[in-house]
Amino acid sequence: MLRVELEPAFILHHRPFRDTSVLLEVFSEAHGRVGLVARGARGPRSRLRSLLQPFRPLLLSWQLRGELGTLTGAETAGRAARMPAGGDRLMALYYLNELLLRLTARLDAHPALYAVYGTAVDDLVAGEPVAAVLRRFEKRLLDALGYGPDLARDATGQAVDPAASYRYDPALGLAACPDGITGAVLGSSLLALAEDRLAEPRALADARRLLRAALDVHLEGRPLKTREMLGRLRGG
Image 1 (cartoon, rainbow, N blue to C red):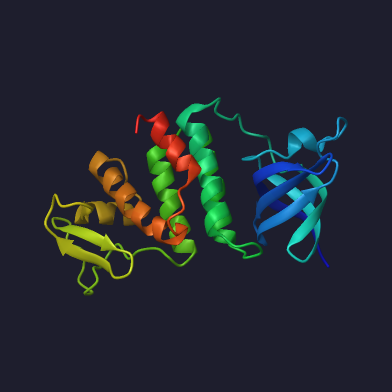
Image 2: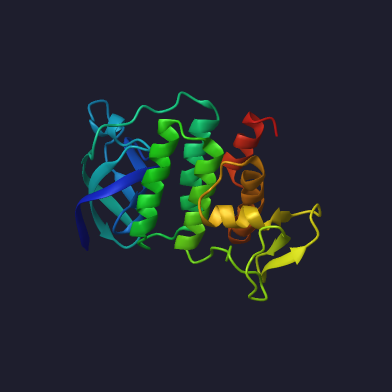
């Protein structure tokens, strides 16, 4: 049996389990994603009811035998941030969680990705531009999982030309193409994404197009619910 004490973690998802318990999916710094049962957490006198919420940095303790563990303790790891009341910013926060739930495996540790996630949550809560925060997170998520596209060189090994246009093939990489064709992105946009310079509208649009193509391969054709909701909130 694995016993973990006061591990930094975030709640990614929670749902009722049996009479008064809660089934949690947590993302922890040293152990990656973990499934836990919080026994009695929905009870009328449980202090865990308000504590075990998404986007709040926590220190969690648990016992684990097999793939599903039992929560044995929880406390805050700092003041809880004021969450957005609704709209695309709140949905963007849930989008981060859905990506982690879909693309990470249980008990596969990613300490660097844990830090990236915490930064993205902080940035969204602080009011940073939603699109830029999401593109940075998507890029760093893909890099951490070993799926990140090479943004500096095309499939032939040539350096990306800022003035040229490219099309991304998940199996092959970047290939030069005429500007204006479906899926084309500017070389300058690729270099901007590589350097986290995402202030220009074209760079943001190109980053969204390329990163969606890279993510969709690993989502295996299954749509993201939060992506659909973000699209509706933005009118498509």
